[in-house]
Length: 70
Ligand SMILES: NC(=O)c1ccc[n+]([C@@H]2O[C@H](COP(=O)([O-])OP(=O)(O)OC[C@H]3O[C@@H](n4cnc5c(N)ncnc54)[C@H](OP(=O)(O)O)[C@@H]3O)[C@@H](O)[C@H]2O)c1
Image (cartoon, rainbow, N blue to C red; front, side):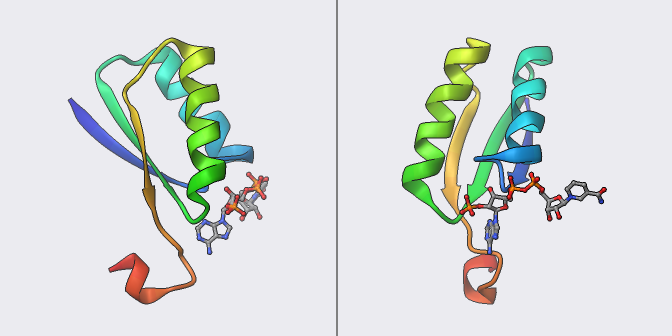
């Protein structure tokens, strides 16, 4: 299984990108790299509900912090 990291996956283009991958591929695992964990966990539940695919998890990432990126 391949792993895909999507930044900004809790809304907008990142959310739609994650949704389409989950709908079309069961052999990919998605990591939602997002700064707001609460908002992202809600988006993850919405994505699983819409796609019936559980190959997704949230990890904290603030792209404005080099420490967080490391
Ligand atoms: N080139 C083009 O034609 C084109 C067209 C459309 C969009 N874009 C660009 O594509 C990007 C996404 O657009 P969108 O419409 O999907 O925007 P959006 O709905 O506002 O989504 C932006 C995402 O980025 C996240 N984010 C912002 N700052 C962050 C940080 N410091 N660390 C981690 N995550 C951060 C936001 O997280 P939070 O929920 O925590 O805020 C959100 O999930 C934008 O940069 C936009 O300018 C380009």
